[in-house]
Image 1 (cartoon, one colour):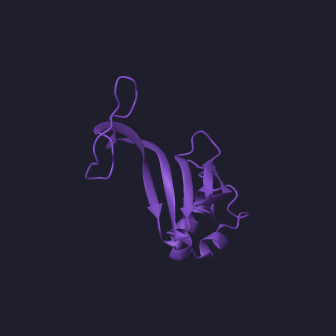
Image 2 (image 1 turned 120 degrees about the vertical axis):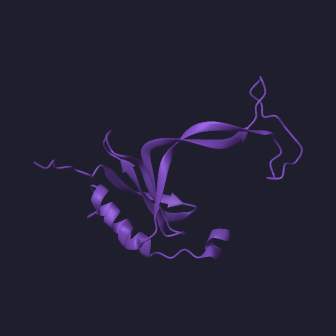
Image 3 (image 1 turned 60 degrees about the horizontal axis):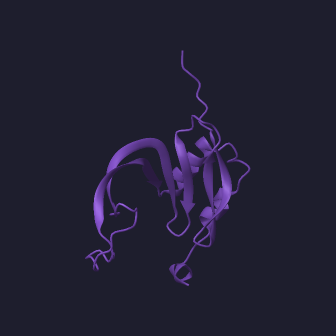
Length: 133
């Protein structure tokens, strides 16, 4: 006997990214496997953040006993403070760049995919000159 699963646990909402209209998807149920999804119009991709965590290393500003950032001369990476490598838990992230894959994913997980006109946002072209200004 197969188990019926309802994957529609997110809702599409209007969003803005870098001053341009877009959409994102937010969790509607606790057992949703995704934290958030956002469509990035300038890159025409859907960023998907899952609830699954992984251990990764990141460079973070070094702080003193007062909690203040320890200053340094300009470093090769351009920062003016000391850094230390720390292990952090981060969420797995995926990116969909193919329009058909994005539409299929949205139709699979969004409860309001049929009422929300996300395809219109995906058609909108964002020019690089508009991002700079």
